[in-house]
Amino acid sequence: MSNKFEYVTDGAEIYRRSFATIRAEAALDRFPADVAQVAVRMIHACGMTDLVTDLGWSPGVVKSAREALRNGAPILCDAAMVAAGVTRRRLPAENEVVCTLSDPSVPGLAQELGTTRSAAALDLWADRLAGSVVAIGNAPTALFRLLELIGAGAPRPAAVLGIPVGFIGAAESKEALAANDLGLEYLVVRGRRGGSAITAAALNAIASEDE
Amino acid sequence: MSNKFEYVTDGAEIYRRSFATIRAEAALDRFPADVAQVAVRMIHACGMTDLVTDLGWSPGVVKSAREALRNGAPILCDAAMVAAGVTRRRLPAENEVVCTLSDPSVPGLAQELGTTRSAAALDLWADRLAGSVVAIGNAPTALFRLLELIGAGAPRPAAVLGIPVGFIGAAESKEALAANDLGLEYLVVRGRRGGSAITAAALNAIASEDE
Image 1 (cartoon, chains in turn yellow, brown):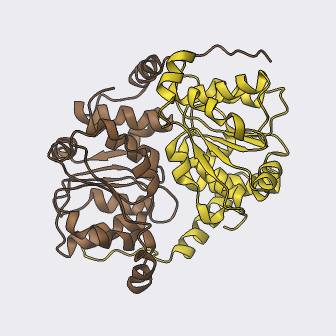
Image 2: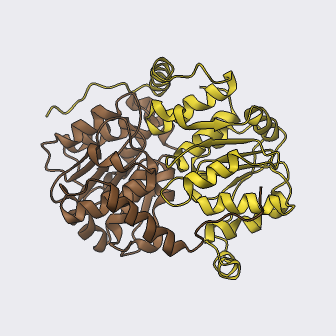
């Protein structure tokens, strides 16, 4: 093995080539321009150009989320990894990035409510929910709980990125979001795929149109 | 839409059912038992049972990484998301979780070295590298740089989880790790797939055998 490998070391050039590869390979034609831009960054985060086949969205989701962020809306995340993945310098208004999962009250709240800690943590979002941008990238139970809370009268976020991952409840929770009659703007990855990296990438693409 | 959805709200039960689904669907037969256990958790993090087709490993990687963690080895991460994904209560020795990417010296170092910030950040690992567990879940340039540093005489980690994601250099960097003649124990996901969630999941599975 040689000591030196041949590879691109210019960060900007890596981004440029990556995004060019994605635009060449991914079937982006059916998307509105703003959703396509978000899709490119989501693909970049997972390495899979076929992610677009599972993408679902409401027509106003990017516009609504983008305006909310410009107006200073907080970003409410279900998992620390999602919050860690938000690129702070892309945010238009030094928006607050909130994850309440590790709040000391959450384990007790979960027991009281008879649900997961991820779902119980949403009860601590209440006073920030109106007009926020919600980014759920881990727990299906958090997404179900969000729909329940809003169904029961909690304030509506400006947009919900609902991209939990996994085998139990993930697909169903995303279908429930996409079928919502609560007037929620949404972005989902249907099926089992999803996760914190894809979710944070969607948020980062919405926060700034820079590639 | 009803206010209440039907879904499993017991966290332990969600894990149990998830892992049972993965074990039923994924082709785990060809794996040694310890690698299979890690693979299950990696699949859990991405929702894709076919991830196993891309898995590559050295026979001693799980044993070596596990022993290192038990002995207090630090975990060196290329990205904040990987570090955020490490479940602290699974760690056997309150191991230090290190990510040097946001160190103020890194942008200058990157310019000086003519490489990305992700790669330059590794130069700050030097005094912790010997016997560590390295978890690279984002940047191919970080993985290439690691191989260069060790090739040039830097101390060897106990194991390298090399699972960067993407379109430019990711596949190549992981092939280079898998082909290393430096005696490095390794775990990779070949091809474009990878990322911080899969990487953190592999680390969490190694840190504790609990499902």
